[in-house]
Image (tube, rainbow, N blue to C red; front, side, top):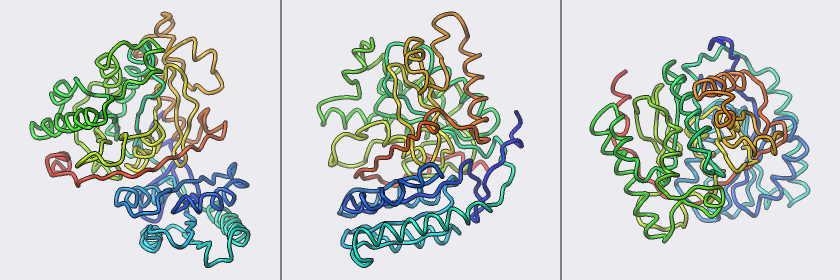
Length: 404
């Protein structure tokens, strides 16, 4: 399949999406019920619920919401506010408006309460859905595609099959100048010097090492690491084993840069997403679950996500489709309705890493062309956004931007 066969949705800001969704975004947990009631009747029409539950301001959450509401897969956004939270709803709406997308803000306290706001929101969603049916289409080349990867529910097979197969798919994408993003710095502890040797500049290599050192410090303060009980039950034995497995998702390409949530890679290549907060430990575990990491990958522009799992994860995501690559052949058979690719065939001698890597790559292109993933077909639209703090990246993190 050539890149020109992907027929994207052309946005007024010039970006291209592979889906044409409307997001209904609550700006505080107190508005979540109303937002959910607005979105629920239209969930099968591509209406997705996202939001930030906090009442107090957080620059990270505001950056994330701006990035998500103007993601190329998003055609329009409805903001639902209680009215007394600290989220800057006016600034978010203006950011969306400047991107050329339709946007409306409903304030529950000003709109008469729950029922009137739900009615107004549903009417706006239906009108906007009809308007988006005329969204112009345009060819989307492979080198315009952004793909993220994450692993969850890992077991002893994850680092042997699904993760390295995704790495092979990443190498194919990067060879075609697509953008590939891997993350989980907290699951790369011990691999930092190997990873740094792949950086395109020594300065970037030092930034990669520092990002993993920050994750290790964070976990020491927290008193635990990313190695979960479920990982041990699945046969993983050490943090090092888990780190090497997680690292293998990155493939073998040179690393072009390091980004943080909400940053957009400047050009094609392979990027590490640093998901561990900067500064003192303030908000608990860096990511409370895999869904939070998926949201961060999407906020960096990922059109779709490659999700490796051994024990079996059923989650999908709002905004961008999630491709499940199952590492364990027994899990793949037991949870066939949830898994897109059975990478466990490698263990059984029925396929090679290269063959499954090619399968993942080709499925990514078909999903970009409109084929629904298993999680999409099942209606999964999970979403989590919490408090964090990040410092801006420095020039050494994006040497690729200077190579244009």
